[in-house]
Image (cartoon, rainbow, N blue to C red; front, side, top):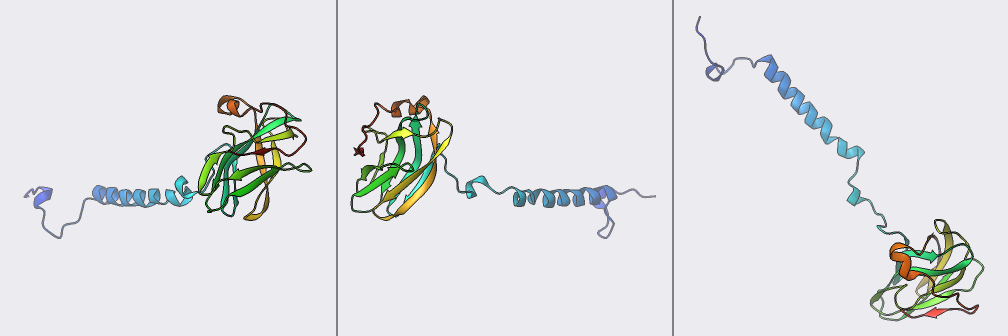
Length: 177
């Protein structure tokens, strides 16, 4: 009997069963694992708001990270967020709670600014505790009004500087960022 090493086996000899099973198992595992992506889509393909607040699109004006900062129910609140105007004209943007007068801010042309910057845009009385949500109507000259659900947050952490400074008067408050 002549012994030959596997490397010198003749060209038509059958593979060992263990090598065949190992190859089929590896191919099956690769096929099964490649199907995981179908059940779990890539998170960067999903649109989401990476902020505490909500976004509103009003034609040329966009509001991002919109929240109301308030110390408690029926206390004054400050509107916080970012306002962006992509048009060449100044836009007047209004914010109103249900059954109340709106407060306004001017969105400068081709600019983006914080709503709770040097001048505060305040609501006279917020009808919810921090941690709850409220309905807020947002409107601009370039689009119809939109009613959005906005979170009410306490004036702590990075919202501490957005805490209402004083109760606004009964008249409409106008702020210019």
